[in-house]
Length: 133
Image 1: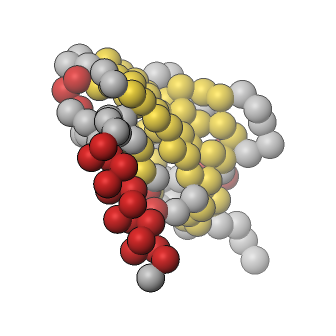
Image 2 (image 1 turned 90 degrees about the vertical axis):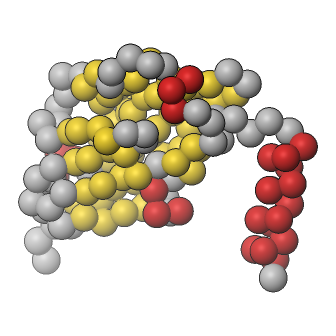
């Protein structure tokens, strides 16, 4: 019952205060485990009009503090995939990051950020690539 009360309260808060740019992580979770060689689909969502938003996807390799921008989209422009240490990266509109043929290089934290008139936000997810047992 407490969770329902939170959802209702959060919904009312968005009606009373602009929640543009509010970002939600993939799978409503913070950690995802993926099998090597598979494709991972990290599907973020956000409140706001995608055609009026600037979007960016980031990666921080596990054990590192260097954040790398994987891709960016500025308002109505096309999405730009940056040269990255991860070879199999794609973006599907409006906010999905696709990681293809993953291996241990993909272990780390992925973030998605939104900037939109009236607000912005970020959400992150930790990705673990399963190892041999």
